[in-house]
Amino acid sequence: MRLKLYQVGEPVLGQPARELTSDEIRSPSIQQLIEFMRETMRDARGVGLAASQVGESLQLAVIEDREEAIAAVPAEMLVERQRAPTPFHVIINPRLTITNSTVVAFFEGCLSLPSFHAIVPRALEVRINCLNEKAESVVINASGWYARILQHEIDHLNGRLYVERMEPRSFTTADNYARYWKDLSPNDVLEKIGGVDKRRYSVR
Image (cartoon, rainbow, N blue to C red):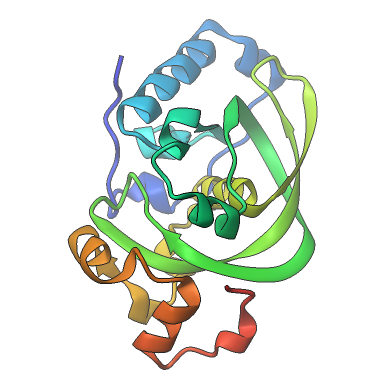
């Protein structure tokens, strides 16, 4: 079942979500929500989806960067972004720790803000302490694109959208991103848009 994707401006997207108890996580209703979120994320061709994006203010997100999606990305871009397939998994009540404070900047999009992109700075490496769909404790050490996905989704769980972190001058429609920017490195984009201190970022 595909769930409704809530769009920017919906109050639920600006609210920190509540934590789930172990009993709640194992309940039929949450297990069904996880399955519906997986279907919704895949149908929308996303790589992550937070419960708030389907109207549920819960500290729960699903993550998956599918191999077939990555196959369409040029090899040099995969290397630049440090992107590799990531199997489906669930994060619940996550706690994020930055383990490498190097900041990297790339374009991001969001299923709750469709048809737009912007350059967003993120930490290169993070550690996530969370629960999985069985209410088991899990520690995730992530770098590169996977770390970016996790930070994006955990922002959702804290009531934040990427527009609160983006380089404002890089904000663009998807059409104009494809027309002007998608073939440029983030460093070249920052050079062209101007007004950005590139020394803050590790971009190639």
